[in-house]
Image 1: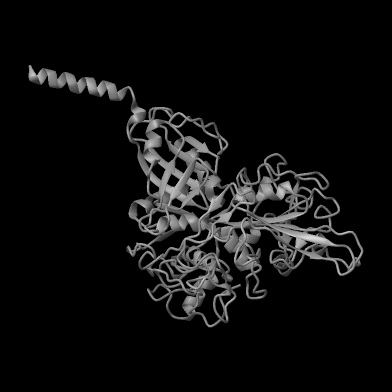
Image 2: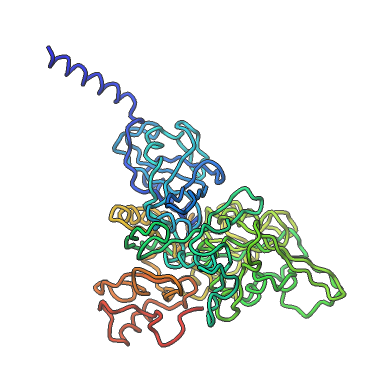
Amino acid sequence: MKLAKYLFLVALLTVSFASQPQLHAQTLSAAVAGASALWLEAGQGTYAALGCSWTDSNSTSHTYVTDVRSGAGSAVDYGKIWVVWTNTGSCASPTPAALVFAYISLDAGIGDRCLFSQPSCVLTENDAAGTAGSNALGNTDTPLPAGIRSAIESASISVSATDGMPLDSAFSAYQALGGPSNLCGYLSSGTQYQGYGRGGWPGPGIQVKAQDGSAVFNVLGFNVTGTDPFTGNPVPAYTVTPVGATPVLIIVNTGNASGFGTAGVSNVSRSALGLVFSNILARTADLVPQQFAGLSATYYGITAWHRESLAGAYLVFDRAIPENKELYRTQEFVCPPVEPLNYGRTIADGGTSTTSNNYRALSNSDEITQVESTNDSIGYAYWGAANFKAATYGAGTAGTLKYLTVDGVDPLCSTYGCGGSAGEIPTATNTFLSNVNLNNVANGSYPIWSELRFVSTSSAGLTAAQTLAGYAQAESTTPGGAQPDFITAPNLNVIHAHFALPFVSDAYPASEGPRVCGASSGSIEGGGDAGGIVTTLQAGSDYAVLKNNYGTSSCVGITDAASFGVHQ
């Protein structure tokens, strides 16, 4: 009798739980935090592979990560999120076998901090089960199943998405905080790197704010080797999984046909671009190759949109343009910082008075939106068909954009405008995406580009990073096609030289890793590379051959060990 009652109870429970499969805990493969530049492409690729999604485009109040380290002040950073899972059973009622990936869009620096902090940041989702999605990946979302929500809630960040190396991100936090002495100005003699005076290492520092104050990012230190600066806990070793290389576009608003909308604004030199973004040049005419128009000519002021200094796009742009060894200038012109960022320059000298403005955007999409919103704006943002899908063209029409060549080099196509009008950004609507080949990234001649990467600190995280990289790479159709977003890592034949950075340490020596040193070398990709000189893989490997260490554990490639400079 007791056995019969037991079997009946088991059967009853089995039926009860089987009727609510969404309440079972699905398997979370990875909780990813980091670069907004990779958020769309990775999400679309993962959805194409797995089949079910839920997204939330709210970046100010719904989804956030918490820095739970003692002394970090329980710092909270909000971002938009996608969650993708395998279609087992159905999207609305997935079985416990469903694999789940989640990615919160922050910036590269915060993503790396959340991964390397010991303990790692914790993800919180405020949306209730059943909440409709935002359809942010371009497909129709499934309302958030209870089991999927349970899988991601309170998850520790296990993978970071970044467009630099981990050491670049660690240094960006050190730089923003101004080191232990809260420095404004050069961190030491003989370096182009300046401190931004946000409160002193390791923080917490002065928060970075969006222009309207609706979003903030926290500034806190972290290490990528040794021990955590807050808790003293050991920091695990990491692995970098390359995804692909993509350019940072220089974009301008063309709503004013006499300002940036004029046909004369099509190319910008690196020096002029650096002087615009370091508060020296103030007029749109400064980007037109012409004779001086006179003190009393009609002029229009530039509005420059900057990213936050923790963002990978900021680092890649800053090291290649204003903070390189030619200019030694900075985008962080006001120190100690004023938030939200708001500074400018007025020039007149007895003639026409012209005032420039400098503002802040806190994501790749926000940067594009802000440049679209204000006449004679200029900004920088990572390319991606999804990132620029809504871009429109037409000088004199509000909200229109064009991209510029830099030092005469086109970032996207073989001809300026990719088959459309001069500077027209390719979209699915204008049908010019098929002409995007990224040839000048592939040959290293375009000066502002970087590799997109996933970083992990565990074997499970590495498996997830490799899986996500494969999904994102499968989504890219370069050259041409509907999604020519980046040159996939296996097809990339150039590399930025890696180098050590001052004041911060890495788990590995600065090294270009197996792509330069050979698969049998055991060499790990380490150091920073934002702003490193560009070389072909052939040249990098031949340098190792020259040093008689190709294929050996002592091989590092063209790094700080070289007898010449490796920084731009």
